[in-house]
Length: 117
Image 1 (spheres, rainbow, N blue to C red):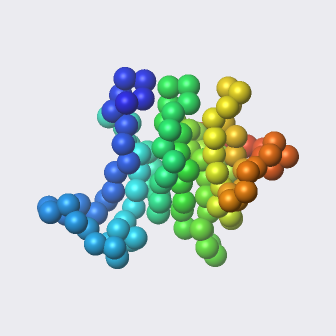
Image 2: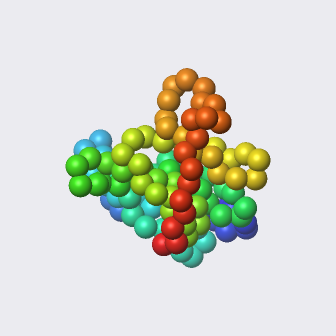
């Protein structure tokens, strides 16, 4: 629940027995459903959390040459990145940095440019 509305990740590959198989799972499209609205479809969605009463998550979409990653916050989307990113909430804002297994520092943060969907 986010702001009193049911919120979950949905897949476009339904199967009656609940087992979609690995190949179909990888080929599926994903979106976040929040209340009676569904966000755009992506190749992958992960890290669903909440900020200021709206869902926040990382999404991956196909780009011209490879994949592009962005952060979606309600009806806003960050610029796309040609590398994996991480996202955290802190100090009343969304922080985005290049995904790395080591601990990131404030210097690693990427300036976010939000666009309305």
